[in-house]
Image (tube, rainbow, N blue to C red; front, side):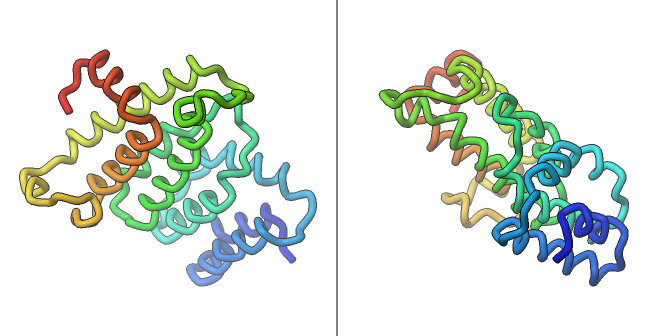
Length: 201
């Protein structure tokens, strides 16, 4: 069985078919019996944004992002849950729907730990970042998403009542993350955020 490093080498340098197959093999390896994988995962996820910038082939970008998204939840950056947010926000604007969907999944992964103090206020909070730090990250995330939402909004979106019925594209992907953010943060926190930032609902 190939290692993560070997699979990503194939994703980045193999032909179109071998790159595609290697990206699919990553999932099997994440959930398989392979040992010694966590150091490799940490290294790959930590360098994902920088490595992605070097990729010029569309198919390779897709394979790379989808492979990273499968292992993303195993990253070792609990003290910095927003360490890849600027890259993920960039991916939300990508014309490729598979890449956008992978970015949505990775952002939603972080929302779980960032909002636990809001969803379960009476629980013992044991994360490596404080509640205040989590609140600030959520506020920054909200500001970035609202800014992107405004950039991609079109008058034709007025006729759509549900996010699921929006046409596929960056605006829909941004709305998916915003909706998850608002659901996880709760009405009270979001109202304070709207008021503080002077943003109309």
